Length: 182
Image (tube, rainbow, N blue to C red):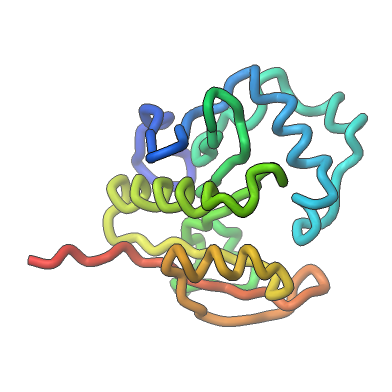
């Protein structure tokens, strides 16, 4: 996996109780455009992008890259979860040189409030813990984003720091895989 380490990509689709985490396919294009054009989804992510621009620039098979999982419910994309290396130049780090794996997620508004984000993110974190044992994962969200703050807590992220970035207070947390008891 480019950037995250010596991990084969894509992994086999992962099934949770209700969802499938899989690689992007051409049938996901409309959902990708909706995610990036949605004012609700993009409230804390810099705002929506113009739909006509997205129609022009989004490839036929969008999001096909290491670290991006499409979240599939009953055969349709409802969101995505990403694991990417955090830019070491940005504020917030756990290691002196930065570059930690960072969890990101976006879900269509009709999927909100049903626990899908927690289910999908937990599966992605479990996969990551198996693929790169002992490596921490970070998460950054605006403190104003109550849903994201609650999700971070539910997933087991603990606050490392807060800082100002993109004109808003950011919450920066870290998740470490549970140490197996022996």
